[in-house]
Amino acid sequence: MGLQNFEYFEKYLLEELSTEEVADFERKLREDAQFSQDYRDFLGQLGNTVESTGFDSADKNSAWKKVTTGIYIPSTGVKPITQKNWSWGRAASVTVIMCLGLLAFWLYKSDPEKSVEMLTKSTVEGQKATITLADGTTVRLNSSSSVSYPVEFSDSARRIILTGEAFFEVTPDKARPFIISSGKLETVVLGTSFNIRSFPDENRQFVAVKSGTVQVTFPVQALDPVKLQVGDVVMYDNATSAMELEKVDPESIALWAQGYLYFENETLGYVLKSLSRWYGVGFSVEDPKLLNCRVTLKQRDETLKNILEILKYASYVDYEFTENHMIIIKGKPC
Image (cartoon, rainbow, N blue to C red; front, top):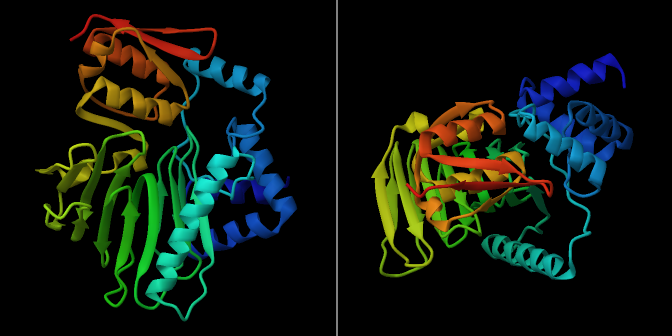
């Protein structure tokens, strides 16, 4: 791997390439096998993995050692996200095929004159990515998230599906609204920046607006669509079908995309789920009542061990690393 490629890879990770250069870089990853292998080797030298598959026990033990000794800090730079090999279980594969099939039908129905070629980009635990769509819209994927979208949008709408969390900076186009399906919610925009959080293992979904205006529709007729302005956050509870609105500082929205861990009076249960995705680790809680403890925290580019130390002194909980790569959370309920 030459110095020229090394500098090229570094600029890509640091988001110093233009939109056109990023598109050319990702095209090379798809079409140039040697370029793709050089980039994987480069990431390997940094201690990062592109995919969760093919990770042997020696790699896992090495990564765990970095976590327990307080060395490992997740990269906040951009990583390439490639189509994963279909080595998942058959049930998972069938689910993905059905979801993409439904999305293709949905898109085709909106513009039957165009055939739909779909792409799905995903991140694993401890990994984040920035994706530039055909219209110039930027999507920043958080860990354990995925987005499905057409190679080219139709002439009437720009439709995508999100699972997990992402921050969007949508290119304005009054003739073609940008529509995101996330869990049970649908968010419609013309051009703005906003954050959506919709993980399958969480009951609540959130849409938060950093700039512009968006409209959110709900799956139940009892709730009218809501228009959100700058700083507005809507929360929808999947279990109760209840909706709540609140106002926040727009500068606090999607701080994760800038490398911050940020929690404002959140439950410890919510925080641990986020840490699990952020650092790629598992937690076990001795007393379920601990999960209701409240946490306020804002830290950037910090090791997991230091984050746990902060939690230890701020919320009266303790932690213990185990031999089977788990972290036990213990202490007295708040």
